[in-house]
Length: 339
Image (cartoon, rainbow, N blue to C red; front, side, top):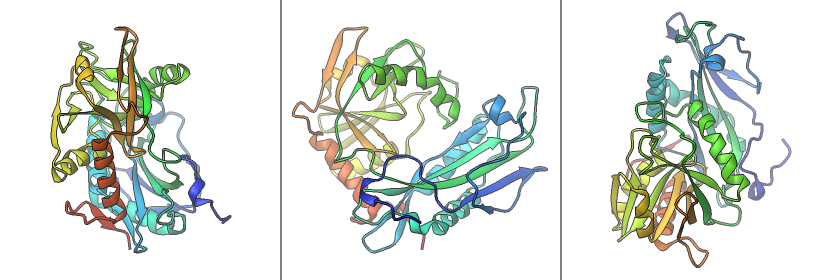
């Protein structure tokens, strides 16, 4: 392959050598298949296209300074995909088969794992969708699982940077008792109106409030929200939030750093009490928030007044990233080695 400029990779798609596929037919999953094609054949009446039977995951492979490739909490991604499949009535992809597919696709594309110290990683995208033909609204009888990889640069070029967010009240990402807790494409499609409007207005993303009362913070664009006050990491609890594996990890990491942690409802008014705020997810790990604008209430909540991420945010970020790359001991048992 043409030598990649590892230190200047975009956060986007780059073709790699292989992907893994598996098919559910006649009530059972088949064997894993290796493919070199970037394309799929899909039936024009597949439920994935017509009725939204689709779920996906995102995780990363990290090259350590010892030359070993690390995966971070892959089991949590496997479990979440199983949960998402159950939420929209798809055949669940078994955890052990998920492990085999993910480890194998990383090994097959080993030459695309960015070197240690470049800030880049190998992004891993498992995908599950209904591939059987149905015209009536019902679950498919056939499913396809695919996992592909692509090397990506750091989400923030030149270091972690605070961003601005816009509170959105006229679009709901998901409703209580709906699909918000599952990682399905429909949730992301539902968020696009607000995301595009926020970007057009000069903001990094939108912040969604709870769909029922518009009183509490829900999702932060495609990520989970957190705020810091009184040395406490506070993140929303809701029936419509996708539980981020990064957020779940930060809640545990906080305790090792002497930081308290809470998952609970977060009223919009509490934004004024936070000394720091941010969004967290696989892509950026943490996106510190500089300011949150609430146009309907004519309020602006400001953080990072000196232009830099807050000290608690950076402490959490540095600790988690150090574990992921193997620069600090993995006291939680989160890391798996590919080789």
